[in-house]
Length: 176
Image (cartoon, rainbow, N blue to C red; front, side):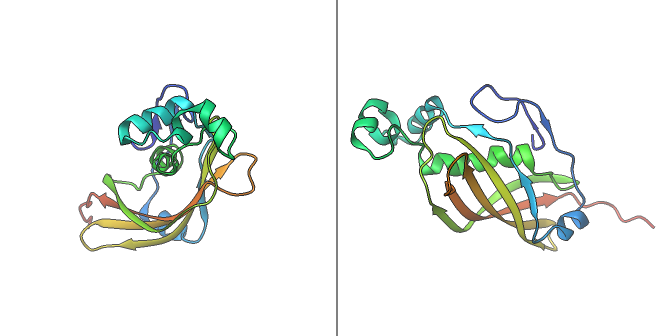
């Protein structure tokens, strides 16, 4: 459920509750940094589980000894798409839902660049800048966030992207 989280170790915060905001508050936030997620450790277990889910078992991700010998990384690194997929969890930990939200869905990315590898054991967090909001007559709200996944202690971020999402808002009865 957006706004709350109870996860096992290897992730971010254990108990998070983010209060909903009004659509007017969201609209007034365009152009601002609207959140920074808690730090989250990327573990070898997470990388292995992602490799199993995606059938991407390249040694740079799954074989620590070989990766230490044969890569410039000094060990295994997370899949770029694993780092990207953690945006959902970091959003739920950080970003307030819009009041009267029925559901939210990914709409895609306008831009996406992987800039630095996330080494096993590294801590990452996401900075969210609200770039745009479009309110559709259908009740859907499209948001565009410029997101940067920071790697603790690294000058370069893991990735930058413009992430588009759609949120369906339950229509409220008009009051007279």
